[in-house]
Length: 257
Image (cartoon, rainbow, N blue to C red):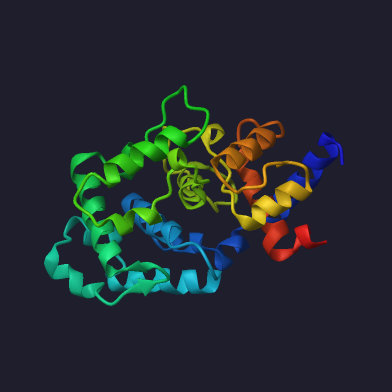
């Protein structure tokens, strides 16, 4: 396919998969349980952080966590103390355990009390053409309170070469505005043009088969290479193609054809 044909193909796949029905099978359903901005942010961040592995298990464990915090994540965070720890004490999802969650809740409380909330710490300047600085600024604020070193591994760093798939996915959820009401668009000071398409094994393999990505590793350099090519098709909203790449990879097994 030439570029025009590829754009037409991917645009059709965006239409096919970018629908409200998508919510039912995706971790984005977790923040869709809520209407308060802060509940959406916090539940979305936690669900995104937990998003690797089997999607059914991810959704199940994220729902369990929301139930443990009384289905009021913002209220739980703002009132979190050592007495609340028993509510999450035996929680575990893959390598995330209650020690990590204790740190997450303490750090989120610090962010909302002292830094203006999650939207503020994911700060984009007008000069930023991608999410590198925003993610690193977030990590610096998130990690400023006392924590065990092990808890840092769940917060990917572009500065260390990671594609930061889960954090870029979370940013897509919060920033993009769409008529289908899949993404939330509740963060108004960030442009969708500054976002980076989440890159993982499936989307990377699809992108390579389509000629959108040459780099073999799924790292930050690959994420930027992919995003640069997606911007050639839609400079204002390159991450909408996440739906196309995801659908082609997960539902169609496109890279295996």
